[in-house]
Image 1 (cartoon, rainbow, N blue to C red):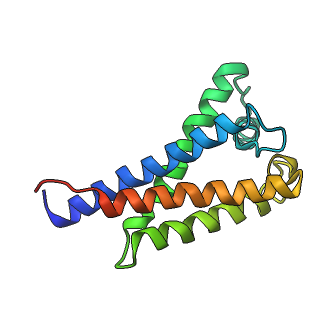
Image 2 (image 1 turned 180 degrees about the vertical axis):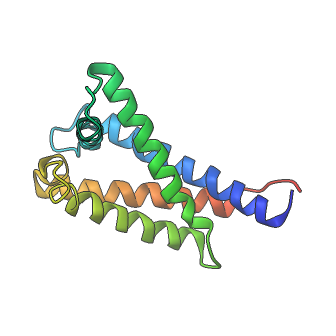
Length: 151
């Protein structure tokens, strides 16, 4: 495997690890903490909006939730895979990516027409949102830094 392909593979695996860690955290804590962010709601609203723009009827229930989770993991995996781009320290890059994603998750849903409450209901919700995206970025960076492929 060439160095470029190895780096791309490490980046993608690392991004997926960060995305899965983030979603497991989101989905677990929201079951127990009322102030927890609700990225699932933002994802479902986004999918519904896309279907409406296409003039189609959106799925409902478990099908809608499943699409939201698939979209969330996929988009976060691609985003977090940026930890492998360039010569920067991957854990620091992951931290930066995570904080930026968290701030985006707090500030962008309102202007995008998805509502603000899922990530800004309380100061604790805002802090958890940013912290959890930071966590996902740190996981991605740590996995990239420690993942070894045999060439």
